[in-house]
Image 1 (spheres, rainbow, N blue to C red):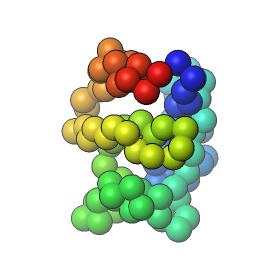
Image 2 (image 1 turned 90 degrees about the vertical axis):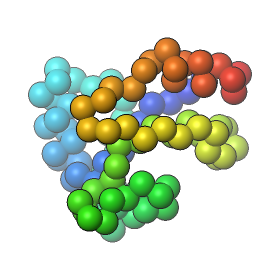
Image 3 (image 1 turned 135 degrees about the vertical axis):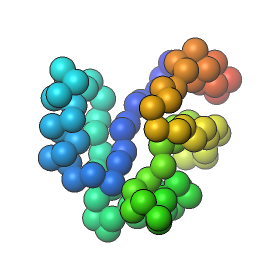
Image 4 (image 1 turned 60 degrees about the vertical axis):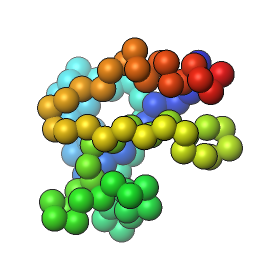
Length: 92
């Protein structure tokens, strides 16, 4: 669908790599928003100052860099891939 998945968190890259390895491998880029701590999450409006980390969210960004879709998730709730694919199809 001409798209790219990225995982971004405020954890250092070594923590993200260990997490990916513990899951048997992750086949998409793991990006650390570690320093300045949470700077990217703050720019996207999902940094939780109280917890010192980003909230869980998915963003769909078009090829021009415009955010076209956002959804926040509570801890333990997994994204619905059918919903995500439907949103991506809207951009095709």
